[in-house]
Length: 231
Image (cartoon, rainbow, N blue to C red; front, side):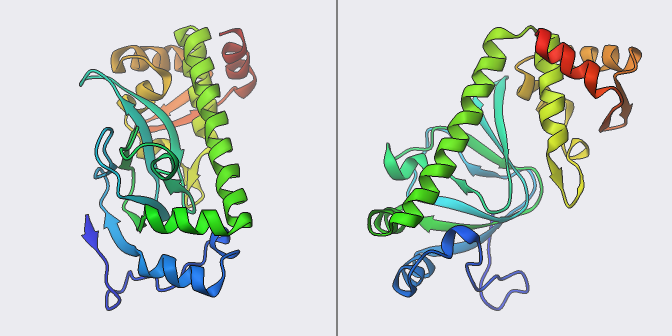
């Protein structure tokens, strides 16, 4: 993690994201005074499950992987976090620790914002609070869908669903697959790396996908959707 100061070329001086546009001048100044701009290198942790949370994070640019840590060898990936999203919002409303870990998939710039400042703005600005609640609800919907996928689908169905979901993700208008390891994909599907590799090769053999080193190209989306639907 590298702190970015105003004299650095990477410094972003203003809060331009739509979610901040409803703030008054006083509220904007409060957020500005309570934030620190930092750069996380690819592979660095933005949050660590179970650690104390005195701030939340706002992603300026880059991609972040959100996941729940398991037994030390297995994690479960929840979602990809993009530019313009918050990380660690639950620390504002609930407990003082992060309930998940997050890691930079690419070099990622964020604002670290003291959670007391966000809490104060939420209490006094109804539209900002509404936007935050909407985002939180959207994230919960994704979480419930992820749990449903894990509980009720067999491994082939989970892998098909994972590939379909990840194909919707992109970074700089390019596929996200080259940025993910096979272990990352396995952790999204709730399986081991070995099983994920085997299933991907079977999908390729059946003409459903094409493996190009780290990239994955979906050739037959209809069949993949059918596999996902059957579970």
